[in-house]
Image (cartoon, rainbow, N blue to C red):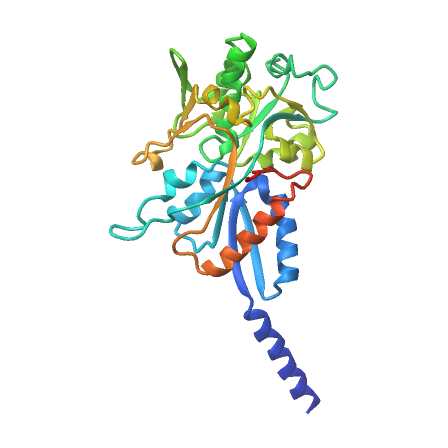
Length: 325
């Protein structure tokens, strides 16, 4: 009798666990740390929900829905412009769009992250960072621009820096000359396009590339990289040192939006050939959306409301919240 009771109780616990709603959130890697906190807080308040979060580069985040057709409840990207460009289109001929709306909720800034052990750590300043990074013995990292917003933003920052510092060699010396095949840079009055091949790989040991910006952190910690183009929130959360860049080039300010637009990165990934994925320089804005075929749209809405409230608090090491009047 006691054994039967134990089996019944065990079955009851299993049924309860299985009844939890699984909420699948696919997000840009740079918000994984904040989302981990939000997940724990949300599940404490709503124990019937199992929030499952995974991170990718922002373009890969959207591809989970549009190309791989995975059942996702919430998508979060570090570049708001990706959502209308890649998701405001039909899921199939005659079907509804992948989504028809999104909510911008946070901003960030590009910085140069490093550690105490980085080559030149005792010399680098906001004025000479590009000279330090150009040294042959200094290793520089950034995320894959074909997959991740931080990656194509790294290229933009390096190119914008040329105009700001009056040095036309910054992009080529720190990044361009060390990629294979090399980017094709086309300059015209008031604008520059950086065209990438379908696959971008390092040439030699000067640069290191990872699929997402957060995956550069382990290389920095281990000394495999000296410097990385990162988001300020990621550097702060990870306890790194960093160089703040001028607002004219760090992609943080609406005030300099027209300046940022002077640089465009064209992605060569053939999957985007029907869309023509051209990334203009824009201020960094994070956004969240619910796919039209989300398994749990009501729960997704509740989670997003909870998440927006948490981001609105402006916690340390998180992207800056967008203040709404």
